[in-house]
Length: 362
Image 1 (cartoon, rainbow, N blue to C red):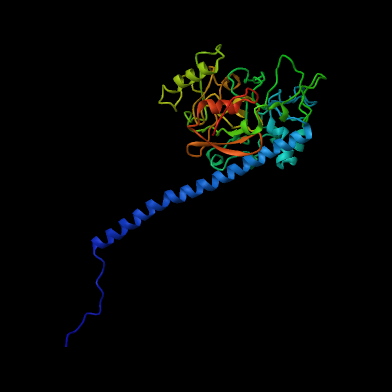
Image 2 (spheres, rainbow, N blue to C red):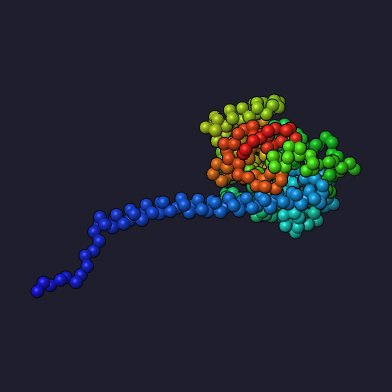
């Protein structure tokens, strides 16, 4: 009779290494799929938020018979000596009641929409509003202010989109003009000398609401990495040149010093005030708007030469943390994914409202 050994042989070292290698390969294959699924979910959430904000603009229009201005505000000083917002208030403040933030609006209104958007006093502008944050963007920054991922379209313009000057009238969200303070925001009262300025209405969008962009992502600048593409290169050489194509070429030349994405580091300002989207209530171009001069996820450049460059004219480019696209809301309320490779003429045509361009498919 043959006796059998009841003990089972152990795994050899080779077998163990093969099993570990197979598990490693499976994990390596699985992780990108998981990340892609998560990004797809975040992208859908982002699209839903943009849709909600686009509908808020239309509800605002129904009540006030116009779209809100990108930048507006109050200039007077409050009784306690606190100054109001110096006319730097973002249009998202006016829109607060229309995207279910009535409590924040009432809180701001109770203080005459003070203080200035770069002041954390009273907590007026430090409120974090989830609706204004893209899910792919919101975890990348943490500041003393509420942040902002979604910006107003200023049009295809390089002039007049700075601090006190209203954008050229080819975008939907015009600003205001310091030299002629005859304006008023229907939602907040604003500051007026008795004459109400007419803002953009749907009837003014003669190119068609489905051919005109209203909102887009412009991602929050990275606090830890100055060369994040959401931040800007300053000191482009043609401050007095107003042609769109010249600004486009000069911005590319500035950014291309560092392979297209990394910016001129002369005089780098490490203050948080110079990073896009860090203050949701600030209505100046760098914080509140974008223009359609440069294709999405391209460089942003300004004619300024220091940390205050965010109130100068410039090329303020749409950007996102979604791979190779930005999501944008058109004036008809629809949301589209715009690829970085979109034809530049089509992208520029989307930024105008009444120039009659033939856009084609996008």
